[in-house]
Image (tube, rainbow, N blue to C red; front, side, top):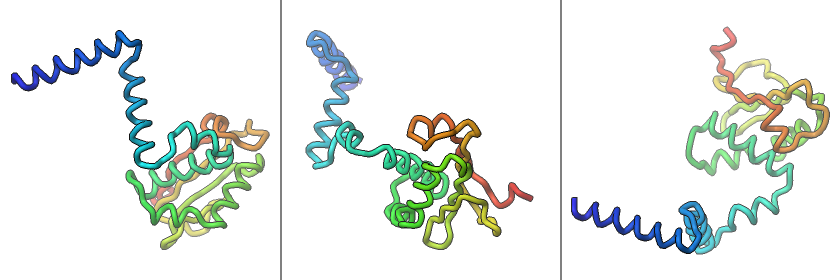
Length: 160
């Protein structure tokens, strides 16, 4: 109990000292995260965000949604390898740039993640689809992807 009391007092004193310097807890947390990233040799989020094109951001958003639906939480190198095929990226790019294509479906076929702009004839166990709103008239950006596209999972049993 005494140890916990000392820890709390120490944290409070450090917080007060930071407030005197004009820093908030969030600022110092960000600074710590940046230092950790720099020490690991990774780029900071802001640097990578500036360098990524709009298309790359959209593909990354889609990849993350599909990964969470098909593989669950946690990073999976096998998933990224299966997702990053030329065919999949071409289908995604065409879908993002063509307003008339409203549906994008992903499912796992063996070790590959397959992308189609139409529902497959034989429905897999689990699929993820993205559906554009009818109001989309231009190529999608990250902002319009989040606002004007519905993403949901589709199970084989849901169609029966």
